[in-house]
Image 1 (cartoon, rainbow, N blue to C red):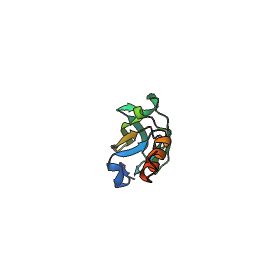
Image 2 (image 1 turned 45 degrees about the vertical axis):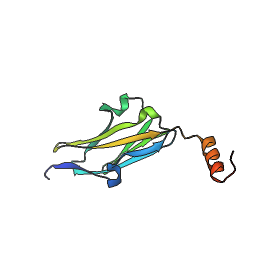
Image 3 (image 1 turned 60 degrees about the vertical axis):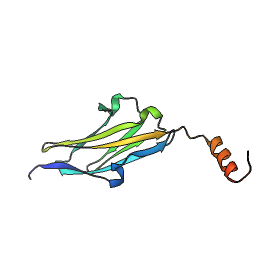
Image 4 (image 1 turned 180 degrees about the vertical axis):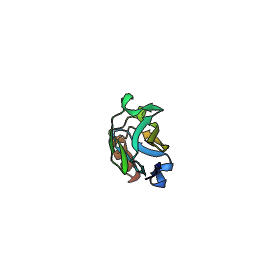
Length: 120
């Protein structure tokens, strides 16, 4: 069988900036194809994810790679890239994550009370 260049398939909404609140989780799923089965490696700000200290879990099988960021912090926002490789070549995809926050529940209660006319 002839080697086939790895290809990446993901939800087109991931092409936009991904936003989440501090201390929440975000997951990026990327389907992968190619022959032989590609390997996947994730990067954060152009460095291998494993060397960055980012709290992340990567799961990869023959057809998908998943990056899950847990309890994200503002410093963990930025450029995430996945590189898939096999003997036919390399393909990459990039995702921008924006971390907002922290989300303060007490502030939400005050704003909700103010909107209800309670004037707290």
